[in-house]
Image (cartoon, rainbow, N blue to C red; front, side, top):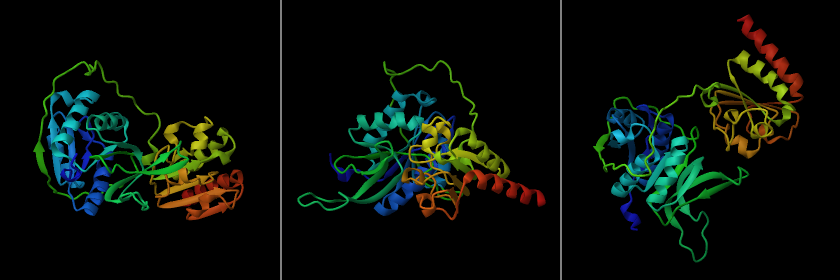
Length: 347
C-alpha cells in the first residue's frame, strides 16, 4: 500500500428518507478543521436513491466535493449494498481519512467497510486531532507526522485511549453524535458533484425488507434540550428524581442522569450523559448529586452554564461548574424550585 496515494478527508453523509442526519453536518465541521491542518479538501460521500439534490446542503456545511452514489438498491439502508458502495468509493478515490457517524447505521457500516478495504477502525470516538504518532518519541521507532489521532473511552469508560492507524489507509473512525460541532452554514455554497456507481448485483448477503415500522419515541432526546437537570447517585433513590422533574418543569427543561443512575436501574440509558451515554451542549446544565467523574464531565463540559449541587465540597464537579452550591440537595432543590416558580410568576 502506497500511503502517499491517499488524500483528503471524507465523510459518510448519512441520510434517512432523503433527509441528511445531523451527525453528517457535525462530521463535516470537524473534517473542515482536520483538512485545514493537512492542507487537504473535504469530500462528502452521499449514498441513497434520488438523493443528488441534497449535495448543496452538504456544501453549505463544509463539503468541497460530494460523491453521489444513487441507485434503487440504496433506497433503504441494508448492510450489503451500502458496504459495497462505500468500499468501492474508498478503493477508487483513496481518502486519507474516512469519518462515519457512530449511529445505528454507522456502527454497522463502519466495521464492515473497514474489513473490506483492509484498514483499521477506531469506534465511538469523542475527539479527533492531527499529530505525531507515537505521541511521545520512542528510541528506535519512527515517529510519523500528520496522523489522525483518534480518542475514545476504553475499558467501560474507565480510561481514555488515543489510537492511530499509521500503516494503513484510510484512517477510519466512527464518531459519537454530539461531540463535534457543525459550522455555521455558508448560504449559497456549491460543491463539486461527482456521480459514481459501482454497480449492484444482489447476492446471498442481501436482505429483503418486508416492512419498515417507525417507532415513536416516548422520551425527548436530551441532546436537543436547552436546559438539563441531571441527577446522580447522590440523590439516594429513584423517588428523589421527582425533585428534579419539578425543577425541570419550572425551567422548561428535561431530566437527565449519570451512568451510576442507569446502572442502578433508576433511569433508562436514553437519559444518560457521559462518555458511555450522550454528549450534550445545553445552555444550562444542573449537576445534582453528581460527583463529576471524568467520564461524566466529558459528556457535558461544553454546556454554556453549569450549576453543581453536592454535599461534598471536594467533588470534582465543582472544578468545571460555573456556580456551585455545597449542601443537602434534598433541601436546596425544592427551595430553588419554589424561588424560580415565584420569580417566573412575578413577571
